[in-house]
Image (tube, rainbow over all chains, first blue to last red; front, top):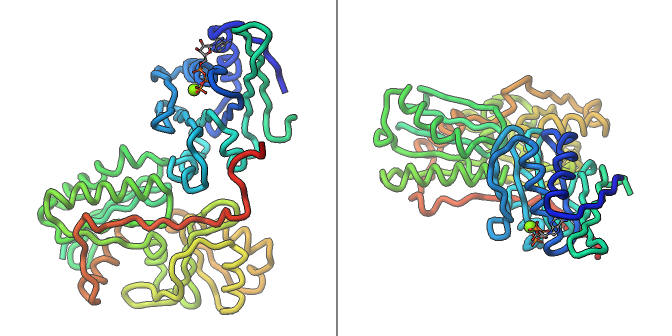
Length: 143
Length: 237
Ligand SMILES: Nc1ncnc2c1ncn2[C@@H]1O[C@H](COP(=O)(O)OP(=O)(O)OP(=O)(O)O)[C@@H](O)[C@H]1O
Ligand SMILES: [Mg+2]
């Protein structure tokens, strides 16, 4: 487990870029933390650091954004996913393979479908308005 | 009869053209789930290499599940897209039956399985048949434990195929079934379902049985859901 303190969106992106150095195809990054915590901002940092030039935006309506690249990056928003059938129809299980990187907002909603070695990124508010406490856990057992 | 077949129900993708029950051309890709980019060019390539055009086709056959959610959708969408403007009828083939097809002359039980994760498979059991494997069970999403119970009761040699053959074989080895029964697992690429099997099955059903092709608008995917009944999806809050 690692903890970071971010004071701005730019710092959040830097922290994400640092994490991205250890990320390979097959990785699943699952975000925890409520509205406006910076999950999309963090994703932007990971995608950029992987050398992927796709424009990152919240997949609120599409549920999944496909950023292509090698490794292939998929960005999910599970906010409206409620059942296993919903999840299946997002393509989640198809993209769960060793060539893809999955970044998942609102992963709480699909907690029990996440692989054991998921990297959890929890973002919580800090003291100041723009402070974010970012906790990274490597795998379900890393508590 | 000329058949164009497309197959993308799992991790591999293929397209084939057959004429009167013989393969004219087939293309196969095993390069991850790139079907949305590769399947249409594959179909175009087999037609070109067969020296035929879309309007020469009497039917477009496609695997309509079970299998990968996006894969089945992409295959179905392409089949409809090619069939509708050219008024070519379509025909859906089970991806499980397509996987079993090359092994249709094997003695004993033919078990075609696709991995549905968590020790579950999409599967059906067959015995030998002349033109098509003879079905013993409908396609179903079942646990490997249930599959094992079925095979134990039949007590016959088993041929495993489909992309779930490997997980099934591992399971049956651990459970002891593989020492109780003679279980063979085909080598290499032949575990995967191929568009040529899809085309030849369609040719058989349409020429030698009373089955009829479908207008593309009636073509439907057949998804099977592995059982998740006992599990919550969301974290306990
Ligand atoms: N330290 C920080 N790190 C990240 N974002 C911050 C920080 N401080 C302030 N912000 C602001 O918080 C917001 C984060 O938005 P973002 O879309 O990334 O959140 P989100 O967690 O994806 O939200 P949603 O749940 O709506 O998808 C932005 O407006 C950003 O400017
Ligand atoms: Mg967001």
